[in-house]
Length: 340
Image (cartoon, rainbow, N blue to C red; front, side, top):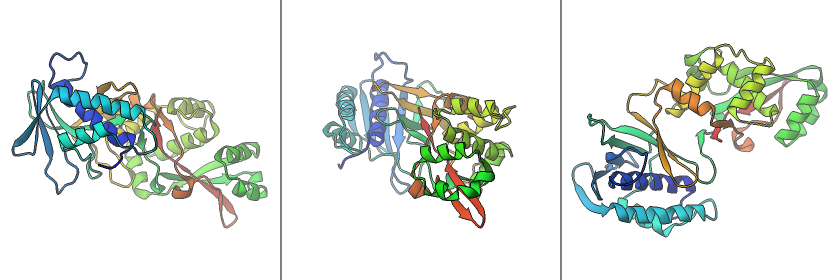
């Protein structure tokens, strides 16, 4: 097995922790116990399924179980993997314990085709429903909830008496901090024009027709604000009167919750079915917890307090650099959300 990044190793660590905990009834934990867990890397592959009994995990496919692994073995390897993650060097790294664990569990990683990293049947659930779980790791760099891309660009016109006069200074400034220092001193405004991606705009207007302009106002406020946390930026934008805060926070909760439940900019959002079981959170100290908020508004309220705005790659996503169209000057800002 080649090296993996922290997020990829964290998926394996989360799976191992859920398996070992569920197979050890005497373990002191707040985690619910599973009776089955499965994952699939590609549509063409058979799902790898884990049936859990006291002290052992049976590893196999959907039809029959082939290998039994003790919970103590999994626990021992997962502890060593966690130590390797804490001692990591480089963006990707090799873990002998992780490689052994992956081979033992036939774990190749969650596939990009699927919205959920794992699926689970909880022991206390009388129904045999499979529920999707999304792994979020707080080990190392905090995970993103919404990744930057050209589809998350918002376009603004730079307006004001100094916009034309200082065009050369604006367009030649390289750093975002310096640029917005110039814009602030020039007393110009950023007026929202449109979003680059029509599908993302359509998705947003499902929640409210004013949501695109609300997010645009928050992006502008974040660019000028030293704190990028959503809650701080919201307070700053509200105090400046740059958004209509009345009822807007509830709309924002719905949007954040939908992103948490799998909404992506370039795909039409039709809501999430009842098969979502929540997030598996891997904390910095290696403890694992389940956050099972599945209603968009309730989940969004939690995310509102735990996310921040962040810029992606300016070169790759073509934002943050003023440009001219005719006699007018424009700039794009990019929406990326990361856990604090």
